[in-house]
Image (cartoon, rainbow, N blue to C red):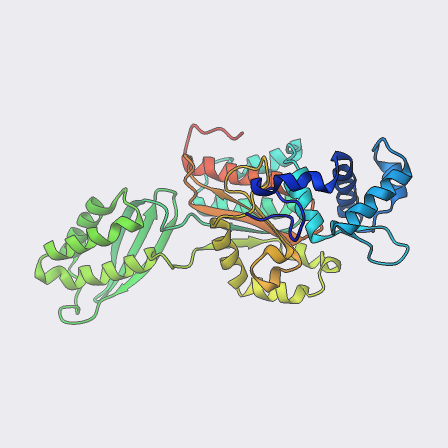
Length: 377
């Protein structure tokens, strides 16, 4: 379990006892006020500002003492002499784990997300809308992963002859994802695709695989290969190879990105924004980010299962060392996650608002995959 780092306080149950070492709720409120003010203004926060803007119920001297304790324990620091304080990575982590609460969406935010499911739309359209809404409402870079071919069940397989030795394989999953692959036949007997043999193979594949997940496909296809007529085995072998390649465990997943310009507007929050933008453009960071989201991560108290918040150095990739990442899982229901979505932004992020939007978009996508009769919450 992640903690606040070092000797600090995190949300791990094994370390809850350390919360008392940080002092009392008043200091948590002081930290919360510093984070809130700094996120809003990007300016170091002084004790006078806290007294003027927040009703903390104590004297300025007490607040200054609390700030000194928070600084000694590594939750805030003073960037310049005579300046106010700003949160550290450790301070943000404690804020998220102990203080931040997912706040309700505003009416405009809820209306914007509701448009995701307005009218007849297929999966491609809904994912495209979702990533745009996510970027607009959070002001961060947004990424939405398509439902994994490996984690969803097959709804239909189509085989279409494209030429003497070429066949189009269309894979449709129960989430509505559609993938197309070209099958090229080679070897003896591959000069002409027999339309009747292709139709028989299509029927056999659908009969055997519809409703099955990727992990079940290998033994089923092996059994079909043993049962197939000798003259059709070349065609079956070629189609099987392409299908299994699409369903293999290490196959790259598809995703869409929006809001890169939002990161560019956060230039003052990064010392090396170019490296992050380059990594995102090459997609390496995003593929790793989504893989990490599927692993055990930092789930803030009160956050739904599948939500993960990683801050600064908690991210595995060096390109994300100055960024925070908020991700959530989505799926058709029953706790089955088939994909992830999330946002990337500076550590100076409005965590409660960002978490609320990420959760809401994930819920809407889950309801879309679940089908009719599921009303958004």
